[in-house]
Length: 104
Image (cartoon, rainbow, N blue to C red; front, side, top):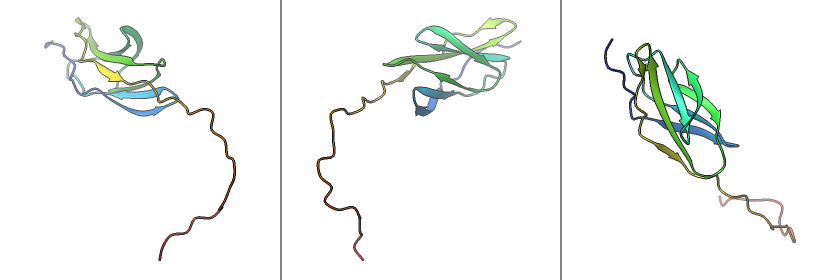
């Protein structure tokens, strides 16, 4: 069996409620992949994407490829920034107009 590696094309999508889908390029010799969040394994899959909940704050993600010979080194780290803070203390004081029109 050839050398096991993991591609560096780790990416995220669908950042909502701190649920994130991570995707990466396939490793030809891999039987499965393990996703690490902040250095802790959080899930395994046989396809090249996985959706997981991530903690609040800055999150570091890495993926490894796994086969019968073992586990590859971790991919480069993908940093998921903290979710933006929800504004607080706003209130509607007066509604002046309830319709919006566009110029013709």
